[in-house]
Length: 165
Ligand SMILES: Cc1cc2nc3c(=O)[nH]c(=O)nc-3n(C[C@H](O)[C@H](O)[C@H](O)COP(=O)(O)O)c2cc1C
Image 1 (cartoon, rainbow, N blue to C red):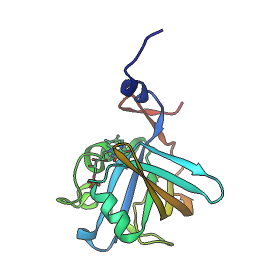
Image 2: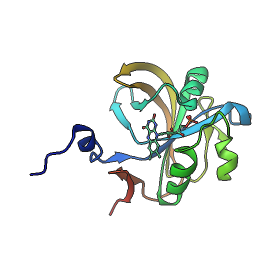
Image 3: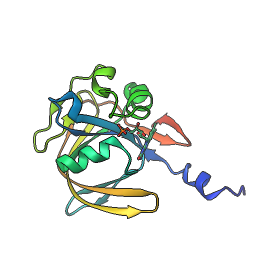
C-alpha cells in the first residue's frame, strides 16, 4: 500500500474533460469558455450537471450574466485546444474561439456558444450554485443534448488526458 497526500489522491480520480462555454456567440467580447475536469452529472430528474469552478474564472461571470452554459465533451483532437487555449488563457484578455480557429454557433435553447465537432454537447440553464470549499459548484439543468461526432471522449487522470480503450 502506498499512502498519498489527500490532494494527490484526488488527482487519481478519473474525470471527464470538457470545455464549458458561456456568453453571446455573436459578440467576441461577450463570449468565453474554460476547460473543466471537475464536472459530473448529479441528478436524473431533473437532469442536472455540476461543475466546480473558482469564482475568478471569466467563464463563471458569463454563466451568471446569461444564466446559461454549454458543456462540450473533449475528444483526442481537441485536447491541445482544451489545455493550451481554453484551460490556460483568460477570456478577459483574449477571444479563445478566434485563437483556436473555432467559429461558434448559437445554442438552440439558451444563450451560449456552441463549438462544432465536439462529440457530445449539453445546453444547460443555470439553476443553482453552492459554495464548496475554495470552489463554487455551478449546477445546470440540461435542456438539450446532442452528438456532433462519434469520436471517443478522453479521460483526465493524474494531470493528463488518456484515451478510453
Ligand atoms: C485539464 C484542465 C482542467 C481544468 N479544470 C478546471 C475545473 O474543473 N474548474 C476550474 O475552475 N478550472 C479548471 N481549469 C482551469 C481553467 O480552465 C483555466 O483557469 C481557464 O484559463 C479559465 O478561463 P476563464 O478565466 O476565461 O474562464 C482546468 C484547466 C485544465 C488545463
